[in-house]
Image (tube, rainbow, N blue to C red; front, side, top):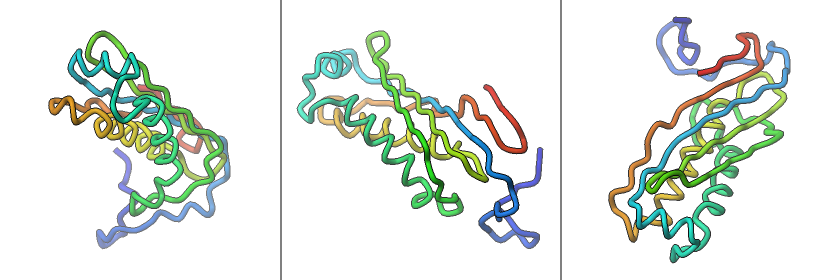
Length: 156
């Protein structure tokens, strides 16, 4: 395993200096799942949730979260995001799948932005249907792939 870059020689947390790194095209894709009751998924599918369009609002929340990641993760660089897509879809009778892709041209990657987009989209789904389903489970939020940078591409 490579050295942990967010700690200095004495073990204190630090923000990594990326100033000397070249700007390259970078992208990252993350995914996650929200498990709900069959009755709750039917409400979401049919657009009958009291708070409105669950998937549409969660999509917007995920996009906004990706753009604000540097404000929420203490050692994360604020990045000029060039594109964010957040896709949510109902699967089976109890699952909402979420996938986010984030792109930039910069000196550091957008893995955290993709993970943040999925996380906040999942939390938004939770918030919008919690009144009818207290058993919601957010699960398997993970990085699926990344491209660009000096360490190259990675695929789960």
